[in-house]
Length: 439
Image (cartoon, rainbow, N blue to C red; front, side, top):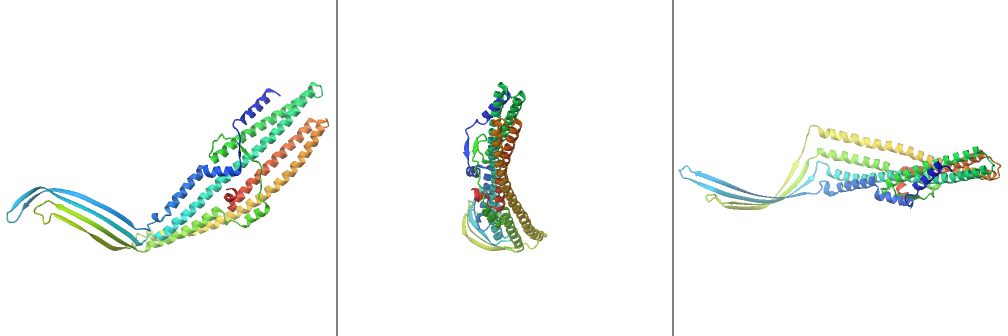
């Protein structure tokens, strides 16, 4: 084997042994993603904000209580002159005033429609939970796509390793035959070219595999250079399970559930805005304490203290505000109609997508079965050609053709297997069962 082939092979060995491999199941990958993925963490924080906003403390349903206190000092110079001609002056007279008050205000009727706004905040919190679920579904779907791509490339790498070993043995055999004059130099060169070709193909796949592993580590938010080993055993849902999910239609689809929430929220908006036509009715009460100290000897009093309760009821009615309330109500009605129309649009799109993904997955399973049969045929053909090649009944060109046919069949079957698994994940997402199946 020439130096170029040796260099490629040694480079491949070095690249694949940089780190110790760690076995990673799909359950482990899901767990890492749910715990570490930054998009999921950000969306969960937004959910917490929505939960805080839905609290009774944030919706004007409780009374407001205020506590206040004042203290001030007034120093004056006073000149006095009476009609009887009496006059005098006082310098630096001081008056001290102190007060404290606690007040309570509560709106019995609120023109802002706080009851419906409170219900809306609850629905917004429920919607935010669905939005987090949607982000988790999209992230997991991305995870599965990359995870199974790593699995596909891992198996493809092994297939190409096996092909390279066959080509190397053939090359070594041709070298021995050439030494004993049993073959010509052209046969040796052809075998060497095939080794070079298989080595380059293997190196390219190994490079793609390493990049795919980094993509997988990025989604899981772990060390990008962690080398992982994918368990290539794949199980598929049986036909009964697929039919059951398909019969459930889109009732569990997250996007559909979000559209339902949008309809509810727009209805509450419409009801809340209608309250703008009503008056506001409120109660108020307070307790106050006041003290005034005056050192003016001629004042009517030098010290005054008062305290007591006060209570009242107030009503406000904004009868006309330039037509803004009219426009707001009209727009709320339009938004409510749009939310219903959008829901109908989403239902049609999701039903179409559900049928498409279901049929695509069934088609991929059929292709996988066909590729399995094709692989069996090519294996039998290769084994027969190998036996005949070993006894000199098949030429190198015919043997290489049989080897390539087997290689292509193995690669096609491998691609079909992972394509079917990814299509299954898409179908689960549309049916709303992706998280429950893998979590």
